[in-house]
Each structure stands twice: as C-alpha cells, then as structure tokens.
Length: 145
Image 1 (spheres, rainbow, N blue to C red):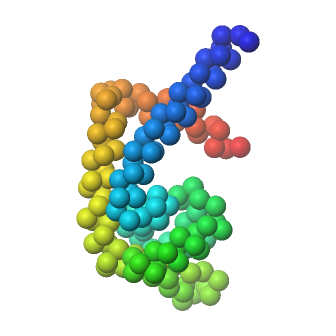
Image 2 (spheres, rainbow, N blue to C red):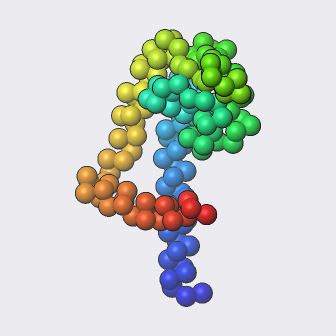
C-alpha cells in the first residue's frame, strides 16, 4: 500500500477516534441532565431555530426520520415541547418548544457550551480556524454524494 493511501487511512482513524472521544464526553453531560443526545439535539434545534416541521427535524440533526416521532413523543411527555398542526397544510405538524423546554435548555446549555469549549481549547484560535477549514474541505464534497 502506498504512503498516500496509508495517510488517508490514518487520518480517517484519527478523525473517527477524536470524534468518538469528544462525543462521549459531551453526551455524558447531556445524559446527566436527563436527556439522551437526540432529545437534546431536537430541543436545542427548536430553541435556537424556532418551531420546525417534524418531517424536517431529522435532516437538521442527522437522524433517521423514523426515530423523530419517538423522540418527539418523549419530549412531549416531559412537557418540553408540543405538536401543532399547520393551519395551511394538514399534512404538516410542527414541533414547538414549550416555556418549560426553554427554561430547561437555558439552564443546561451554558454548561454544554462550556464543556465543548473546554474540550476544543487544546487548540489555539488559529488552529481551530485551520481545522474548521480543513474539515470543510473534506466534508463538503463528500456531502454531495
């Protein structure tokens, strides 16, 4: 195997391991607050982007659409979001964060944000910018497939 292929494989492994290690740390904190990572992602999306059609949530948080109903059901049972029918199109149902959901995310998001910063702060601001640029250079063309 040539050295360019070896470097590509090594990069893939290092990138995968780094993602896994960071994700595990972030997910521990999320789970300590009584949510699973997918529930947190849905709630965070609704908090920052406003109400969303259920059919579009999966694509925005990288989750299979079949799982969305289950996650939305759980969040609704916890009183963190509500469903609302679209007045113009009965086929569309929106997920809307409740006041309780807003209070919950406002209470835990600063810790989440600080934890991510702590994990990423091993890099300088310049290194972070370079990493973002390089990862986009890898990811954007692949996303087109």
